[in-house]
Length: 203
Image (tube, rainbow, N blue to C red; front, side, top):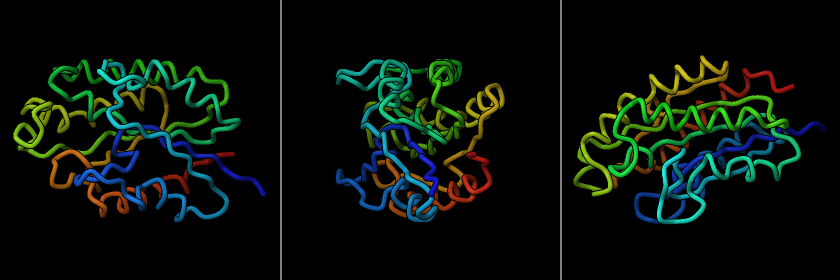
């Protein structure tokens, strides 16, 4: 039986970090694997604090520096799902929408050169809470504005590289900390992605 390998690549929301500091058991990748059934294997590559190109005091958090090595461990990737960008909105990182575009564009340029990669689904992150500047001092109101507008940039990049696109904020939203998915959002996103993936030719 053919198994289709899907890799979910992202930050703490791919990892399944909960607003209360725990890790969800039913994070979106787990629910997605259950919905798609036995013909698919969904692998997780989520790291808390990961950015596209912006530095972090913690090691291994810059996506563009490590993504090729992380994906190279898979013999075959039929679909790569990238949902990354929330940490780019931090005050010390991107301040302009053009900088958000630069970060994801740089990551995609590097990823598309992978020989074992056939298809990509790019997901723009959820909308931060409007009071994110109060909930988390690493963000400010400009961070909220960037999260509100980033989908237009991501969709444009998806068209540029002829890859699939989905806007997570259409079905998912943050919990009490203003930045991490609620449990319901993981389930909603998984349901939406299952529909998209069933319509994508992975052969």
